[in-house]
Length: 186
Image (cartoon, rainbow, N blue to C red; front, side, top):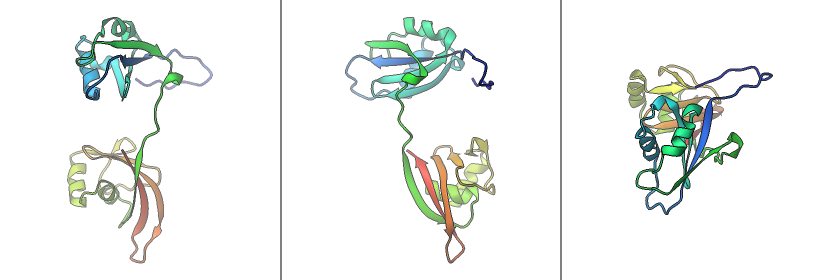
């Protein structure tokens, strides 16, 4: 669900944020699948559920406002955990960490997607090309070809391998290769 609005006009966004807290000791960490499975088990359509952000205490679940009360009254367990507390919170009450990155420095023959992905995901350019032909690669959310060029700030993802950001282009080597700094999302 996306809304593009002028800033001057107030708009009531039809999304609720539910904080689900597990009130008993958790032996194994709960996963996104545990929360989604419990919600879908209530008969809720997947399109009514947005992001689920798993946290040590439980999760933040973004849902359409029209199912907010239904979930609060009917969601009585997550996986095998039956002592849960559900509260609706405001966006400013979200406790989110900044994404964590691993920095990768190296050189590439060009700023083509296949060369950058090969360095960032530590796989061969041949493998990258095969995956890109299967439409498994994106740059800034758009499907890309191996020959597409990346620039500083671009975010690339390869299904099954993760996501990287081209942080900096630092110059050329004597052999005309380009120094780059990548950030791999952890």
